[in-house]
Image 1 (cartoon, one colour):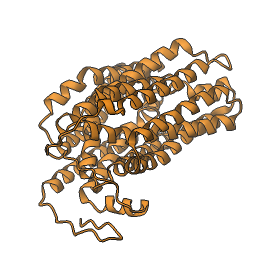
Image 2 (cartoon, rainbow, N blue to C red; image 1 turned 90 degrees about the vertical axis):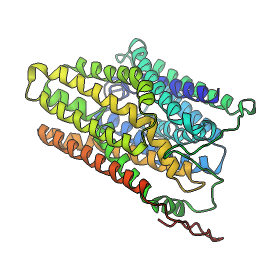
Image 3 (cartoon, rainbow, N blue to C red; image 1 turned 135 degrees about the vertical axis):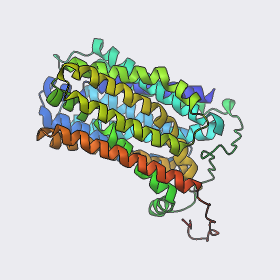
Image 4 (cartoon, helix red, strand yellow; image 1 turned 135 degrees about the horizontal axis):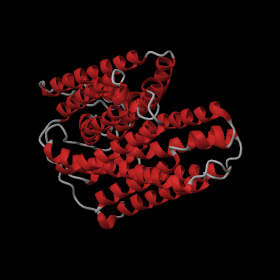
Length: 423
């Protein structure tokens, strides 16, 4: 029951966020007439807030009750969403977006820790997969519903979307609070399942710097970090800005094609997610990440053909989003359990928070890279760069696979005043 409530909480939260995401830029830049600088700054501050909140939220999930951490972060997000309704100046709007990013992302590591604590090893991939599917569905429904609620011709035309987002995060917080009640408590048996056995004891009394050093001292986590960064740069960093910009400036397709591509991406995820989880049940995490990198590479190669077939450019662009989605169905259920299984004892939340920060930070770089390259008219260079990044992800996943299959080192005993981890 707890897992179902967590999945529902994730879907409801993303439904609220989905009502805001597609329209926030146009609202700030055009509706409120604050200009593109403020609109872009709002998106950047959201990312900065998310980048700050992820490791802090993960650390708090190790040291405090993760239920309280997740609930508190979601209430922060709800408060920020409601604040956007009354934000009447660029400064207050920017501040609310910063806090919104903190709340939205701060809850993620704590929710992942709750899945790891409440769900047995054999079902973790399935629960993470359902969470990802719920988020995709919630985002799609929210964006669709917002199309009927939002009126960008009126100053207050976004308030229904902001109110829906705030309500969504309040309901999400309530669902997690209910899931954390003692009545749902069960004992989770945690057998060793491939690379996903997780041992999470109480957080050691170490400083944040020592915690990061302990995490970075694990070779497999270093390779996992490289996989995370390259896969984020290889697709997620370009999903909202780079790929649409390439479609409009290089392929010269209609704006409606971009919306159709995003919808196809969501539909493929929803249709295939659980099928992929069943088919890949016995496959190790690193092997699946290699496949994801290969799918990312294939997607960019397919997209490259669109520039040479203008009459098919729109079809190829939409197809590319569908191919990317197949890789997403493998990536989402694997990364968190894999990273948690490799985390030093007591630092699972900190590790997940650090990896969320890595993905968020490098994803925020994507629009800048796309703007520079595509602004100069180098469409082929844009494609070639991302093919190279995706191939690097395949290599990093392969090295992770090799590292995990190597003989395990023996850890030295812990001294009283510090944590020692032998790589």
